[in-house]
Image (cartoon, rainbow over all chains, first blue to last red; front, side, top):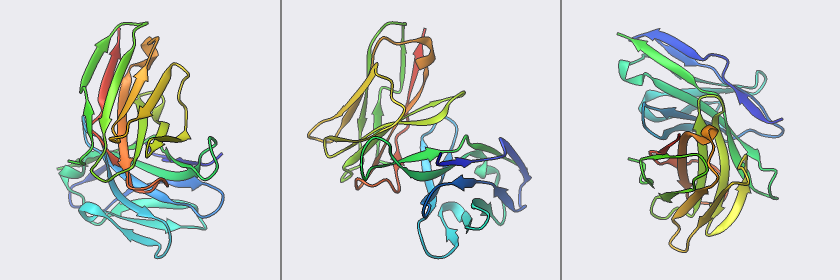
Length: 118
Length: 113
């Protein structure tokens, strides 16, 4: 089955330290990968995506993600964490929908709660 | 603000009832997606409409249905509600039919008592 996995339910990091939120994927073919962030009582916000090209993708709010084909990973990173980065982070992959030819859907990981400690 | 609007923000109803959730996509977006978020199931894709036509179907129960109208707003109808249907329901929109960057609304929190 095509899926993504976020192995950590929670990540704690001190303010100013680098942060990494992990994601691994399992898809056939070339993956389309995404990161979204959800703040409390809000909808998801798009952070960045990988479709093709450079393995290091830069996104919103200083976040970046590294695509690693051999390790089937797409980890989210930030050089220096802010308290305001505390939120729920979702990795997602575009998969072929079973419902119709040429249609796709996003499959999300379970989410990782990031807490940045002042 | 993503530009996607959802109403109502909160909905409390009883088992067996029927409710309708409404979504207006960003200006210019032709695709609307519906998702259900719950603690035990996480974020689950329900269904996608593109320019009025059903495009992709996910884990949507037969008691649930959706449609997209000519003005591109969408409604998700949930009937014969059960306690387990209590969840956050999100709508998202995107420019085209193929799923890439999606813009999410603030969600409707449904509580079934």
